[in-house]
Image (cartoon, rainbow, N blue to C red):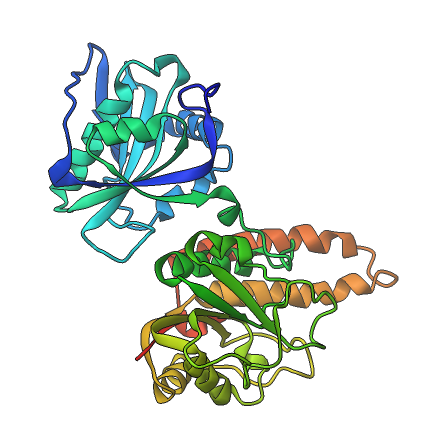
Length: 394
């Protein structure tokens, strides 16, 4: 650490909380030729904004920043010099760490390298706080992976909250491919948000396979226990408990959290599995399930059910749970687009009679991208491919 320069990139994210009542204002006036602007200036500075963000945040996905939780029309703050972009910041009315509607988040500080160290970071920060105060927020979260910045934020009144290893956020599901990146992008994001909010202590991963969510859950739990059937997967190295979801060989109220992703449809008696989940989960503990509504037959012949939100609510409440969240993960376009790509894959195996088989993968990628955008325009949730269920043991 001694050899690191200010703003060098860390291998972890440091999250701080700033109560707006505790904010220590550091005065800094705008120099001649500088101005603060908002979203109205975006068309003029779009290219420079993308260039700076991509150079400052290497894994930043430029087209999607407007989908940050709590995004508002006046979320962007830009610092300009004679009309040219110098730096920016995005203020959101909600945060990615909890459901408290009184806490927002400051995202993606960036300052042109030529202007760093001249107080413009402080200027953007104070404008971001002012924006959050005008919305009536109680405070904001700030997360950074830059050496030296946590000390700066503490000087302004922020306090340390949590460290998050980057390995837990750079998640790549082992089943992800060019043909299904769309559903895994959406599902893994939803699971990640649920894990951050609800996971703690000892976690049981039912139908764990190769534990694709192990790194994602690591910062929030003390132990990740994988349960799977002995004959279900060839690689058993990640399985800690062999057995089935109806008879988990641990004592009552042993786990603090349960994770079960796309497994319930493969169980002959799902109500018994949920009942057993209730037995091994501590009172007040949470379970996180993902369950399909519209999906093609898979892992045959062990593919038994599909579930509506009403059926899921009934199953969990009947077996001693309180539904905390029950959300569809897509609308018609994602479901239709993703299933169409899976349908097209059938023709890849017919290479002798289909000379254009090699076009199927890139076509599939394009279809998923279009479906993703259309789903944001018209989210007809009764057509969802998957639900995420968060339930609390009473």
